[in-house]
Image (cartoon, rainbow, N blue to C red; front, side, top):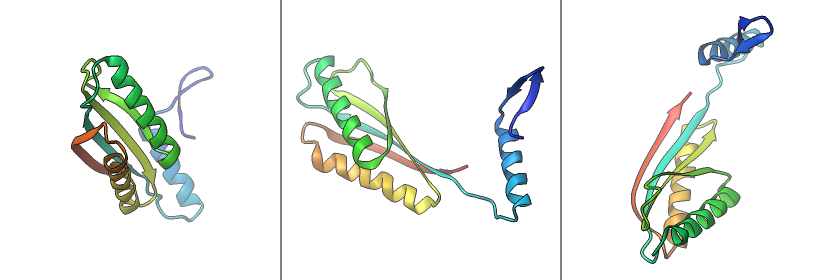
Length: 131
């Protein structure tokens, strides 16, 4: 089971119990260890034309919605929430291959650079993590 009993009828899901249960289920089925990779990116944008937080929110919301629709990626504004002309977005994708996760994140960054003339990419940090 993927949870530990904390009190009568209550279970707490922990990362260790989740991984232990997953491993034992795969071993019992005769399968290999499954790999999950998370591609993460922090994207810093400069919004030249933004004169207010309302302008910034419009650009960020439009961009986030389009990326979710086009790439099925998780997107959130994570820093510089009160700065008018700077937006910092966190992006995440999940894959069963590290190379695919990295390529997907790079494609997303390229799409932002090519499609948004009102948002200049000034910094990007890409990482792929194995779970």
